[in-house]
Image 1 (cartoon, rainbow, N blue to C red):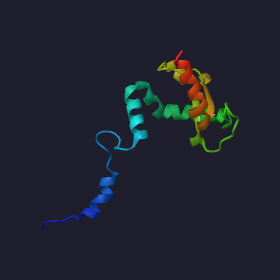
Image 2 (cartoon, helix red, strand yellow):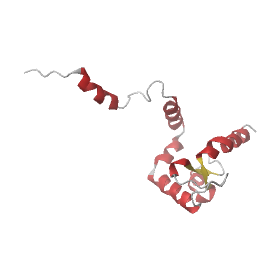
Image 3 (cartoon, rainbow, N blue to C red):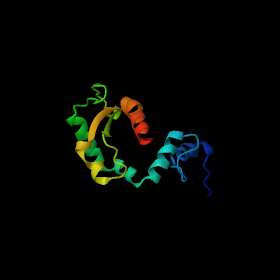
Image 4 (cartoon, rainbow, N blue to C red):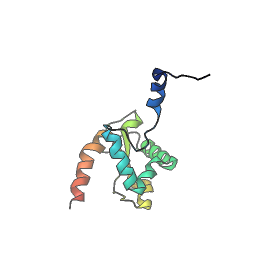
Length: 122
């Protein structure tokens, strides 16, 4: 006996399948992340359990307080363990907890990144 599946039954399953060739069209943020992560091998370090433990230890050490604006942030998703001196792939500098500080995402993505880009141009 032949089994028939209705399209309406397949739609939820199809939506959960991962794309085979990178991010879906229109998802520019994911596309940029995909390109960046595949371009720099050290980007993978940010996804390791070791980095996640180190990041949390920096946030706790700095009492969840932004070193830039002084804001105390209760949601750790809004905090970044920022490298004071850009590591540029240097593994020792990347893992050095003395080179890391806690900053809020707003400061990290705004004034800090702006200063780093200005210094990179010199």
